[in-house]
Image (cartoon, protein in one colour):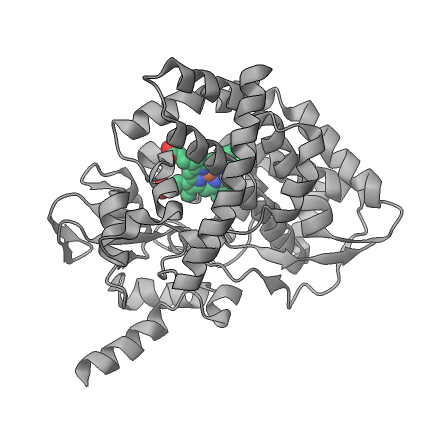
Length: 410
Ligand code: HEM
C-alpha cells in the first residue's frame, strides 16, 4: 500500500512523458528543486534538479557512462543482443575513457572555434537560400521550412554526404529521439529502433565505400582512413560515431532555433529589444539555451559508492539523471527571476551543452548557426508573427525538447 502511494506521488513529481510535462516542464522542475532535489524515480534513478548537483555529476570522475552495465541492468542480460543497444554502446557519447578519449580525439579538430568561424559564410548562404524560397509566400512553418534546413545541410556538408542523397535524409532524420528518454523503451519501440538503425547502417556503409573510393575533405573520409589504419577505430565504431554526429548535429540545433523563436515571440518586449539592437544576438542565444534548452537531461552512473550527493547516498552502479533544463532555472545561480526571458541577462552559462569530458562537441557550431539564423530572420522578415504562439505543438520526446511545427505569417 505504502509503496503504491509512494509511486503515485513520485509519478506526480517527475513524469517526463506526460503531455502537460512536455508542454511545460518548468513548474515540475521547481517542485523538484524545492521539495526533493535528489528525487528517486519509479525506475530507480536519482534525479538531480539543482544546478549544484547536476553540474558536479557531469564533471566528477566518480561518475561515468557505464553504458553496457546500465543497459543490461535495465533490459536484462540479453540487452546487448539488440542491434540498437550495441550500436549506441559505440557512441563516444556513451563511452568512458580511454575509449572516449580515443574516439573524441579523432574528430575534435573539425569542431574548433576557428574551423567553425570559417563556416560563417556557408551558414549565411544556406539561411538566405531558405528565406529566398519562402519570402514571397507570406507564410511558412518555421521548423520545417526554416530551422530544419540549416543544421541538416551543415552536418551533411561536414560528413561529405553527396547532395543527391540528401532529400531522403531530410525526410527521415527527425525520428529516434525516444532512444534518449529516461523511460524504458517498449518491445515495439526497440523493434522499430532496430529496423530504423538497420536501414541507416545500410546507407552509411555505402557512403563509407564511396569515401574509400573517392576521398574528400570531410569527416567520413577522415574516419574511414582511421578505420583502415586498423588500430584507431573498428568498423562498428566508425558507423556508430558517424551516425551519432549526424543525429546530434541537427535535431538539437533545429530545436534551439525553434525554441528560441517561440520564446522571443512570447516575449514581445525582448523581441523588440533584439530587433532594435541586433548586437545582442550572442547573449540572446545563451539566454535561449538557458531559458528553454533543446536538451533537457543527460545522465551518469556512480562508478563507486558516493557518501553524499545533495544529502543522498548513491550506491555504486546507480544512475543519476541531471536535469539541465532545471539547473538552468535554479535561482541559486540565476537570482534575478530565472523564469523570465532576459536577453541582456549577465553571466549566462547554461548547462545545456553538458560539462566535463563529454561537453558538447558541436556547441560553438550550434551557437553560430542559431545566431545567424535568428538574426537574419528578424532582419529579412521584420513583420513575421507566429500564427499561434500560445499553443504550439511539441514533439513527444522529453530529453530532446522541440516543436513539431511553428507556423508563422508576414
Ligand atoms: C543546441 C544544440 C546542441 C545542444 C543543446 C547539445 C547538447 C549536448 C549535450 C548536453 C551533450 C553532452 C551529453 C553528456 O554529457 O552526456 C552533447 C554532446 C555531444 N554533442 Fe551536442 N548539442 C548540440 C549541438 C550539437 C551539434 C551541432 C553537434 C555536431 C555537429 C553535436 C555533437 C555532439 C557530440 C558528438 C557529443 C558527444 C561528445 C562526447 O561524448 O564527448 N551537438 N551535446
